[in-house]
Length: 177
Picture (tube, rainbow, N blue to C red):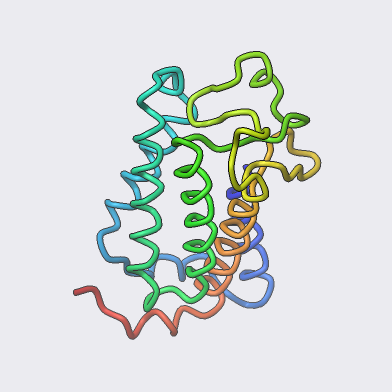
């Protein structure tokens, strides 16, 4: 939800400041299918019964690593994408050091408290590492828990979309390989 909100904010501010939503069509990415596939796999593991399959959390880690790699590959094409990369890399780091699980603060864990682990999530505690990078941020009115990495990704998405809507000339000169 946070990321959708960030995209909408970028669109709205881009249009308010004189940009055009149609400018998004001028963006050219390297291997756009890679990011699409990585996001679909990531969301499938989060939102479907796959999250009950223990090994699926490793698919989540691989998709997050693919997102980090893809965003790095787009640095010269999209100003601000480095924030998305930084946020995804922080999430990847905390998930990897916790055995492919993202720690969630107990006060925001909901039903996770009863189960201990669900998919790629685990309850934050003395046995988890880098808890400061885990899901502990609550953004009203959303009931979800967010990590500092998620917030960075959201800020990065808003900036990338704003810049693309507002000033596509930066991106027009770049041609795909």
